[in-house]
Image 1: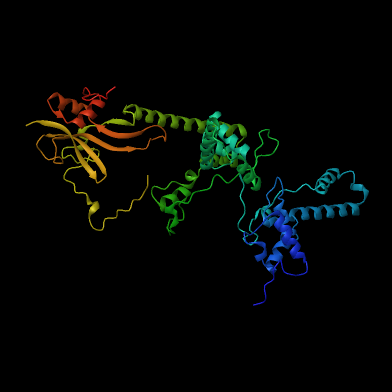
Image 2 (image 1 turned 90 degrees about the vertical axis):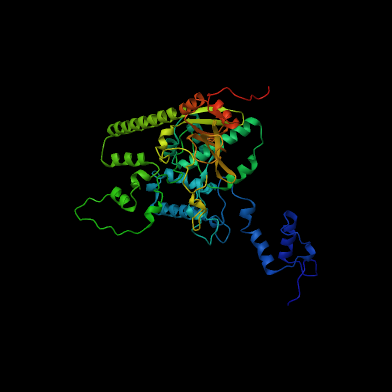
Amino acid sequence: MPPSLRCTSSLPSTCAKKLCRAGQLTRSFSTTPSQDQRITRNRRQLFRWLGSQGQSFLNPLSGSTNYLGAYNAQGQLKRVVEAAAEAEKKKKLKEGKGGEAATQSEPELGNEDKEFKGEIPPETTRDLQPFPLNRSFISQPVLSDELREEIWKRVLQDGKSVREVSAELTVEMSRVGAVVRLKEIEKEWERTGRPLVNPYHEAVMSMLPKTPYDPTGKIKPKPHESINDLPVHRATGTQIFHPTSESRHFTRADAAEVFSERLLPPDLRVPHPELAEMHKDYKAGLSVEEREERQKERDAIADRKRERAAKKQAKKEAAVKKVDTGRVVFRFTEISVDEAGKDGRGFKGVGWRYGHPHMDRTRGAVKIPTSVE
Amino acid sequence: MVVKIRLARFGRRRAPFYNIVVAQARTARNSKPIEVLGTYDPIPKAPIDGEGKRWKDIKLDSARAKYWLGVGAQPSDPAWRLLSMAGLLEPKYRPKA
């Protein structure tokens, strides 16, 4: 083994040693006492990196993500370098063209000025890779504070349905539900004076890509995610060879039936079938008025259906007698003893049956629950 | 012999479930009764809409229960408690104020 090199020994004051000291002034990376720290090649490289490329992570960009993938080997932002090169190219082109285009290209000049001033161009997918060796890992945007507030407002103050809000703001329905629930908790905490970890929230949000929302409508709304993806159903996992006659008009609904008798066609299984219907009308070349008319009809049908279901549910609920005893509510449901039939084994009858052995304790009976409540 | 309205315990260990039955007083608890008036599930369930109190499920044929009370069937104490909650009897025990 080579003799160990120590920082405190009579080595000439190298660049690395200086860096080592400088590093200790700002932040210690190790709890080992400084006299035990050896100057190794790795350590030297670390401090060299911290002095050059690492500077971008010590003093992160404000108002942008700051991932490793966004920087080149020299520690420069790739998109800034590219924008500068592009601007240079344009400038040269213009010079080549001469004075004839000078009057026409005023807006372009404005753009160049922006870049020269040092305004950072927006991130591309390449700049959103936190791990340069894992190219498939792309940091996905999260909902901005304004967008979350807007979702909460539309659902709880404007009384819109989750489905509507989801379609309007292109945010998945489950996410809309989650935002509303968490916002409610947040507001409850604010009401009761429970402290929120706002500095932490702000720090994390400043580091992540966000989906913006501008209430004034100046910024064009950006879709947050794809909201109408067809969920994979287990029944469709098998490969089926289904012979049909050539003359038969085999639709998606038929295919669904082949997979499973109870499987709905994909047009109905997507989260927003109404969007598909609207698009179908658009594809059919209907005018805006006609499309609106059709949409209104569909809305009316949906409303009627919802009302009927609500009425049915209310009727069912009204038939249940509720007695509150303090800790729990006893719910009395009216039944009829005649449902059990003459032999007491009718399938509508209630209660534990007599003369029926329970087979769940027999050998070989599968007792693994299929669902958890 | 006396006809009683009482509870018959079914279910599993730590998972009780009762049939509310009309039976002869001297028959075994889980023997075949004269009639099954309903059921009582004493395990509280989580509230349906996610808020409010937990609830216990009782199914009861109140018309038949009334008939049996009318012809002199004697409810046991737990059965009396349930039937009084359903409004078929005067409560036997009241919480002390």
